[in-house]
Amino acid sequence: MKVLSLWLLVQVGLAPATAALGAEPYGEATLCRGRLILVRDGRRLERQERRRVRILLGDLLRVGAEGTVLLTTRGATLRLAGNTILYIKAWQRQGLRGHVRMLYGRVTVVPAAGGRFTVTTAGGSIRSSGGAFTVSVTSRGDVVVFTHRETPGEEPARACPRGVGGGPTRS
Image (cartoon, rainbow, N blue to C red):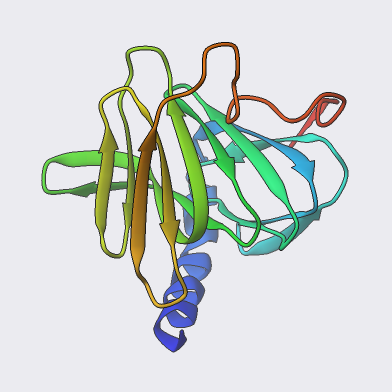
């Protein structure tokens, strides 16, 4: 845990330098329930209202214990479960590239139609060839991956429950 804390401090400490260069938009997060802590440019922004938040490269997202957040990008829709921590930063490893570094928690990924999506963890990279998958990273660093098919007519990872989310986008 000390290594993870140190790594986070170093990464967050470097965030203001990337902001000065102009952070690139990555997607939009919709807070379905609970709270979302967003670290951007070394500042901690907390969101509790059910609003959409613009996500930029270099952002660190932490979902509260009882929270659910949908992250919509050009390549996929991600459902972040409670106590999930994601770092949105470009990475490249063994010929794979992406922008999502998963540090802890559980994320369900539904790639865009015909698309591919890759998530990296400390234990390796998980790449989808178009199918939905769920990645869990435990506090011990164990990585568990489930692949699954969506039931026709159901979209479990693409939308908040009815009446939740929406509203104007905030930065």
